[in-house]
Image (cartoon, rainbow, N blue to C red; front, side, top):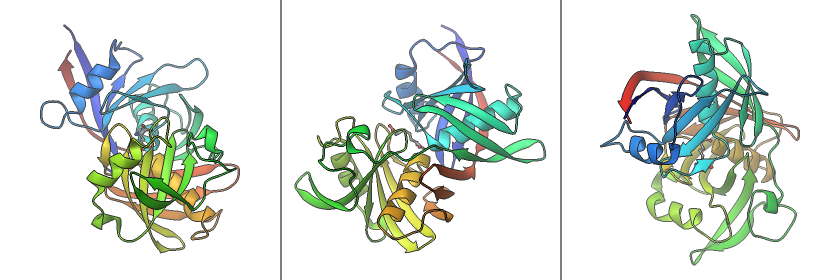
Length: 280
Ligand SMILES: N[C@@H](CCC[C@H](N)C(=O)O)C(=O)O
């Protein structure tokens, strides 16, 4: 038995329990994530995030979903990791490099009264090659393709932002039975590693409304990589234009995304809720 110090943080309501792993060791993050994510018997969150030292960057992020699975990347999480590094002084730099399982990402801190309040992240290139997303469908890329999922026909666009995404365009996503439809996509064999699924209503050429079902965590208030994938998909399907700012309205707040061939940039809030300590 021992204790672990943590910080509860969120980006647009996508909340995780963050651990300073420069000074603490977590032996079994998978089990800890399942336990702490419980909103009744735990701290409550969409998973846990370990902020670790790195030999090649200012810090390294490890993210675990609420079901204990480790993910390669988290858009809302990386903004909070940047805030954590900046505010705690572990790396008090306006430009931060953060290593992830999908490579090093570059973060620019937006500061107010000495604290990071928002972060712009260079998320790198959007990956469209099906085998690298991965999605088991033929072709050079999957843009507006009709596929059969659990007996239904859907028009999908598939993108990797370091993790796999399937984007669908339609009417108001708030009217969807997401608890039924989300798991069907997550577990469909065309996505060999599972998938995060975004349901999008195009409001205008600079504005999207989105609801997300996340692999490993279910419905969350927001998904940063998902908002990036949605903006990329909106451009590929001709709803929005590359190089222009696209605001994505999520259940928990807004993200601004800018997509070019070279990179996807994401800007949004990073918020600390409270510090705590827990027996493990
Ligand atoms: N909420 C995240 C993504 C977290 C990981 C995802 N569920 C996966 O398994 O790929 C974000 O903000 O990007």
